[in-house]
Length: 347
Image 1: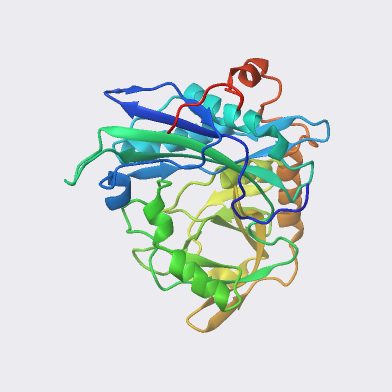
Image 2: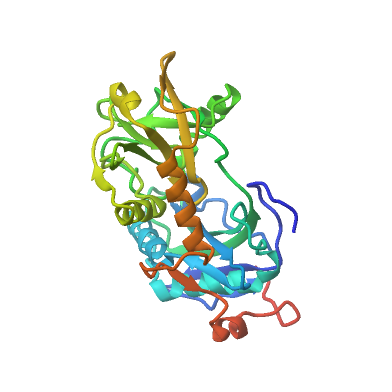
């Protein structure tokens, strides 16, 4: 398979499931990558929607690994609960993901640390509704796409600190919902147009401390310490949580503390981390025309953490934390999806 960028590509099958009259209908695996929804759906007008981002990894032996999918399931439930949408169980969530991956196993990139199958489960409020209230019908879907790197990891890149807030101090920040991303789209675009790798946001209350990136958490290495920001407005990254545990494995002291703008240059290394970003080194941060320099090169600890994380995800390093769940060993999952040559229901 050729190297992929981080863009959408059509695959073979897509997972569709509807919720109506208080219950989930039978899921459908279909070649149809489209859905028909009501024009007045709450997802379109009031942002009643949540999603997750995951990856499936091809090992040297040809197995397909999932990385900590139950944490994604838990975070998804929290996002759905916040938006008054049905909460689905770990089993429901993971079954839908595995069925979609197995149905598209030919699209999982071959073993390569720079490639994986990105998995996007999501839920939206549908049905005719004009008042500001929750929908009574919902759609849960899963699609996958082979991807390459989202953020470059070849060297430490410059980042721009935004003067715009990503979220309110006590608001939607801890939830993975579309509005948080739509709010930063223009800021991120402008930063990249200026030559920055990505944009970083400050805490929305005091505007003096690093909060998180447009789609990633931020961490710093100072001496023997791994430090990541403390904030009620941050989406807790599963990757960052994993890096904290890996940092402890390396003998580092892990701290969840404030990172003030004025202290950026006291760090030996800094990085952005997330499912899409993986671990991307930060060379500098610029705020109001002042640039705070960190490092021109990939720091040794950042490099080691990235290699350990990817090694576990791709099955090259022993998984002592029991993070990996295999897709390919579940034969019942393989048998359970509806092949293309069987009947399909029109969505």
